[in-house]
Length: 183
Image (cartoon, rainbow, N blue to C red):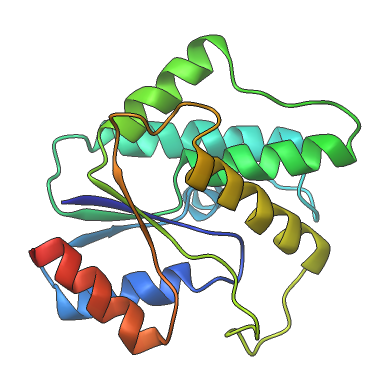
């Protein structure tokens, strides 16, 4: 099954992916678009900018579409993440960001190749012990992702991947995901 794990920064995405792959070694882990671009030498600003996020959104679509024939893969982030970040950062930069045209088509095609999107919403109390950068951004992106995923107000999920919202302990999350994947 083709899986993408989505959530704001510091929600446990990479930890869940690592734990899942340890329990299901037949799956491949596709790194976060930020790291793929950084390895290619792409420079990024110190804080989130719409230009950097648009580049990561394009990279996310490219990575997902390029591996469309790979059946057992887990992506660290998907276009939904970047849409949420772009909407929040766009508002900070005083403009409204909305996907359209060719980009919207790429986003729809990429999401259509996925079988499952796993959403990790933030919990209260926070399950992450480390200090998180940009807590205001983290909170706003989490709220925006909840709206995008739960309400599908952009119409990107209709007929697309199943959505699994995971909460709970580290072990509980990976066990639930394993149960869903193995049926």
